[in-house]
Amino acid sequence: MGLDFTVVPGYFGILLMGMGWTISITVCAGLLSFFGGIIFAVIALYGHWTLRLPVRGFAFLFMGTPLLLQLFLIYFGLIQIGIDLPAFVAGVIGLGLHFAVYNSELIQASILAVDKGQYEGARTLGLSRGQTLRRIVIPQAVRAVIPPMGNNMIALLKDSALVSVIGVMELTLAAQQAISRTYRPFEFYLAAAFCYYIINLALEAGLRRLERRIAASR
Amino acid sequence: MTDQAFVTIKNAAKSFGKLEVLRDINLTVERGQIVAIIGPSGSGKSTLLRAINELDPLTSGEVWLEGVQINKKLPHRQYEAHVNQVRQDIGMVFQHFNLFPHLTVRGNITLAPTMLKGLSDADANALAEEQLAKVGLSEKIDEYPSRLSGGQKQRVAIARALAMKPKVMLFDEATSALDPELVDEVNLVMKQLAEEHMTMIIVTHEMDFAASVCDRVLFMDQGVVVEEGPPSVIFEKPEHERTRNFLRKHLSR
Ligand SMILES: Nc1ncnc2c1ncn2[C@@H]1O[C@H](COP(=O)(O)OP(=O)(O)OP(=O)(O)O)[C@@H](O)[C@H]1O
Ligand SMILES: [Mg+2]
Image 1 (tube, protein in one colour):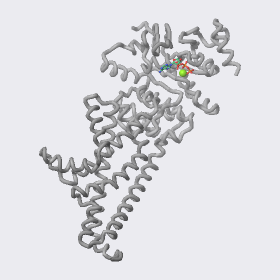
Image 2 (spheres, rainbow over the protein chains, first blue to last red; image 1 turned 30 degrees about the vertical axis):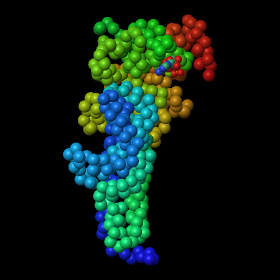
Image 3 (tube, helix red, strand yellow; image 1 turned 120 degrees about the vertical axis):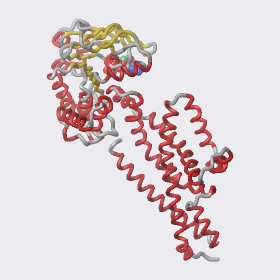
Image 4 (cartoon, chains in turn cyan, blue; image 1 turned 180 degrees about the horizontal axis):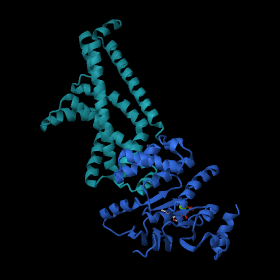
């Protein structure tokens, strides 16, 4: 059986919907991983041990186990203790927390890299420790971390395909649906790959713009 | 406390671990006075300056500003609150400027007044414009620090400190990191402050500047004040051999 890409346009609708979900889940999980990463980093560096220890254990868990397993645990496992999350929400939480842990590592390193003079400049004006952290150190650390964190966001986009296993109708699952009706895996997986590529290009363009915008304020 | 000087340092001592950096330092600065601190590298000049605003707290001794003890022993929380309060009255300018790179010049200047003194945005902006005009950088108000020359950065740093309306200004080698041709513009701003009778304590390697601007000069070596007096005495007929040796090296440049 030869290749026949003419079947693809008939399923544009479903692929487009899949793209929509992939973008939604990437944006939501991306935001969660960004703000979660900042919170984890601050706790890891400055938190009381009663916060620091659980966060460290949690980070260990999320870095040391497969994301797939984490998604299963959040979606299927939590039901057993009465937490029945919609698949999309479970996917956002799983992906978001997973990448929050990685972002936290980056942010911690860049917080520690902020020059001592910045603390002194701020404290000398009368800012408290907390104010200095919030207004001076973290904004600078976040700016410094945007480029490497961008790589994490691209990884997040690609790993979002995993949430297909808990039934979120994102791009990969959408392609599978089309395949189950047409028996054309090559055409639709390639089409899906192309869609990922398009999203990726947009994401990278966005990241580059962001980097340019913060370049002056570094 | 009314008979006290404006800034008083009593029996100050400071160690970093086993290293004794300051020993038995006494210093009084009257309101509007300008004091220079000179001395060889490692003699403790920066440490003394940084003790005044508790960046490097003394091991023992007292620091007073206008009848308020800066280095009060207090429980942690109260100490933090106290220090944050008194630092608002003490401007400090660093060798490496320490401007906030993620904020514009305006943001650098307005940050502390809005956060700590509750100034409205409009008032803070007016203040930033006023202070920048003073240091001759009105046109740079919306630039980021990375776009400024070293001399301009330091002038912004001075404007930022002045925006808190400090009672005293501390300068730690404000011109040492600058290219020679940029030194004058910063010195000029400092001279202007002197004319406005700002109380200043200036750590400097520039003997000419110290001689022309300061009322008193302290020569420090190995953690002690070896001698102090008006510039005419310290620079022209110093009493101590150590002072003469130091000046010989620094004046014959
Ligand atoms: N945070 C610190 N920890 C340990 N030792 C320190 C610290 N800060 C300064 N010192 C030491 O204290 C001594 C005095 O240092 P200080 O910076 O006050 O000298 P200085 O007179 O300002 O010198 P310079 O002209 O080079 O700036 C030096 O021996 C220095 O190594
Ligand atoms: Mg020094």
